[in-house]
Image (cartoon, rainbow, N blue to C red; front, side, top):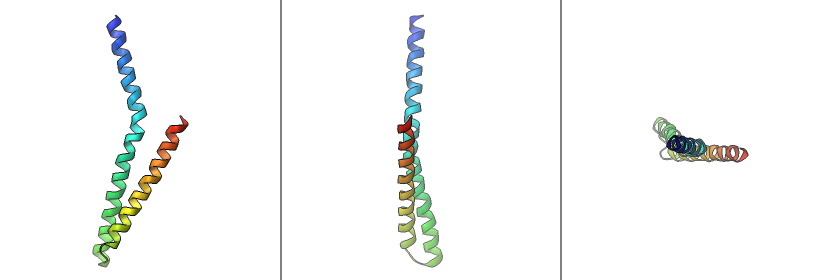
Length: 81
């Protein structure tokens, strides 16, 4: 009986840790995704307009900026709870 309580407590602690960590872990994926996505779009524009490397550089900075913006939103939201 005592061992079941310990297992249940451990499972609850792990669940709570993942609830806290999940929004913070998503920051990394959104930041990487934004940089890759906008960098790719910049590459497409560079190929279309023969303006290399300005489209890629602009796209990477836009993706990074939007990722930082999202990070700030997530951190502000997690601080409210």
